[in-house]
Length: 379
Image (cartoon, rainbow, N blue to C red; front, top):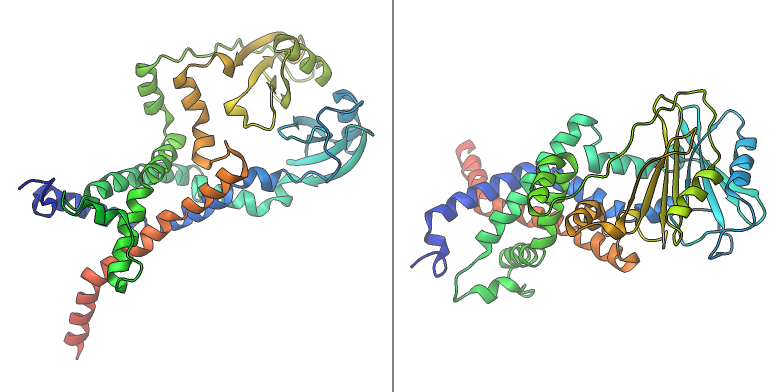
């Protein structure tokens, strides 16, 4: 009789059990914080995309990008242009991002009337979202917290892998581990919840663990992908820009990018001219409402001359490049609209259920007996 028939008698399964148990015990509070914050961040694009409610339009209005930027800068004369974020289905309102006193001032300009429809300081308006993001990405502890988070993601993957081994009940009883007996006694119901949800959500939980590790330690993963399918790195020429040199206008850069990719629309414009070797990045997309890592054309310019420093398009990516670029979208479920977001947010709470049911089993099988013995000794 081996593992397939009577897995409980195999010695190495006991080692897997101890590994699974103690990783779960150590990561319990961490997983609750990560999963709750992650389920909220699934809706981050919706929470941040709160532009003034004006009639939707499929195309930009009569105002040019230069005119809209000028209106925003006129309202905040001490600011400098940072970005234009058009990653939305509503092309009427242009969110113009300005750098001002160490903060990001977002000015919403109506492209039909070339008037300001609203403004806000990004860091103040979305303080809760920003804290949640810091908690999820770095445990709100900075760089050190990010490293700890990467290790936590790797341990979560190990826990899911060992959990899958522990789930196997034997060839005669394997169907039992696929369902929950809702009318069973509490201890049995708790076990069924842990076992069944752990099995059916194994792929997703393992994915969240390994992608969480990837975000912090990408090099080994990229090297493995390179061996499977070489990913030619996009070569970017150095920028000779120096602060104080004249800079071309947004219209100039966007028009040049569209000549390279004529079938695309502006999705995101970013200008970095505050330091030496600055550059301007223009992201275009046939459908800007789709997350950029999934469908984008990028052109990087020298700010003064408009020389192209780098260009790349998702249309030419191989499967390894698409996978490495789309990992963020897969992790947060922002690739399929609100139905996928809701599904990801709900399933993202499954590890919380596994933590709670796991702690209950630990209490029933181990801690309860020790507590009873301790009470009897005190008497």
